Length: 598
Image (cartoon, rainbow, N blue to C red; front, top):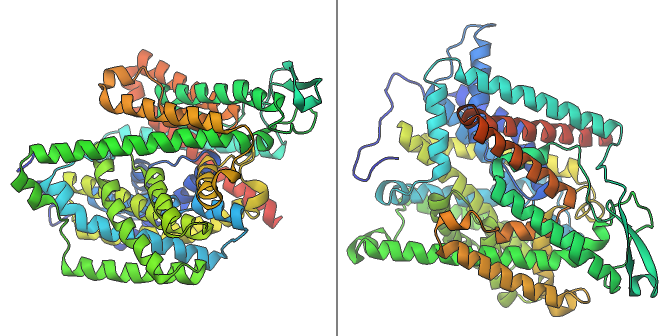
């Protein structure tokens, strides 16, 4: 970390930086990695930071290319341009593909054609790029916020460009596990191998069976082992606390609440087949307490982090705070913001019939919330896209009550701006540490946004040609979609949107989410690591139980390696996990495309 007042390193003039090769490499790698985040975002609502993976792949490609034709190796500063463009492309998922856009399709039936979808993704992302460009001096030079993901990327880039065999070993490891993961995905798809459950059954009595009993199997409730290794990879990255919290939440939801809902007749059971999961039947009830847990916990954590920031800035002195209160915006950036605002308001009006006044409010609110997102990401490495989107949803629940489209798509502007802003700020932190040129990185980010918008749009259409039939199912749980959909329904329809018997569960979820997030924000990390995460508990409600089991397996396996082989695991566990995620994601996209084309 650069100490306040210290001078960051500068790039030696003889070393190339913004080259055509670096930009094209970033765009190509971004095009390969973007489908991974679209796939995992729709699958489990999580995405992966692709900066380190892009840096490893870029260096490996150009190092290998030297064997076949004369070319200089990819330098540190060129590779930084590569990872900036690639990570910008991969982070395009935050522009709505994993939440508001599918939720809109579920609630209204409106879908977007490929050109329109690509343009929308690009437009909402551009606002975040402009905000980040204006915030760089304030957050990185004056306030020196850590931006932990940017620091990790910078240190990794330094290591792999320092010479030696370590970079090659990491790339080979990533490639091997990606190939194994992809092969397993192709095999399970070809032979239609799904989750395998133990032959356990129970009898539920109550109104669901007319006063008699109905047989429920472990598979009906989703307790099975999934051949997917994508979730194992995510579990290894998420860690034991988060994965265990997800498993606890899933167990409470599917082993306790689901049978209660069935026995009381609040949910009609699915086909009387012990080999069929009743996910789609039960999720319409369970998503309400789960979404309440996640939303309440996210907003509470967000509020606590804001209070902490305000208190810290006050401690630095009133004069210092006043100096830092306004982000630095040059005339060029002001013009850029006005252009992106016009584009966004126009897109909202033309595509979703959102009024000019409402669209302008959405952009201005998104501008403010993108600044908030950058600050939170700078201190915690977590970008609260979901929580910030909910703030916009609540705001437009008042401004435009009953308008589901305005509720979702104005919040979409907030999510896209926040996600892209935080991604660029992490990359600018990486560049600051190694002495890169910020303006060059902003240019690379723009090329990455262009790539991501074009690739993500076609990926989404290939994967989900029929959102209403495919999403919020056992195959595509789409938990973020379910959450955004639930909030929009309540804000537009009131309590009538809720299923029978769910209000007590919602109340418990609200109290639990608020209490756990409050404790998490007020006590030391040495205590919170033994407490469940409220957001992760809620996440367990809206995914099949077999996903929670796989996440936990991955987390425990990684923890065992860190315990037994700490030195080896430090440099390799995340790389292996990334390989599992990238391999299965790409194979899933290819499988979906093949099923449509052939």
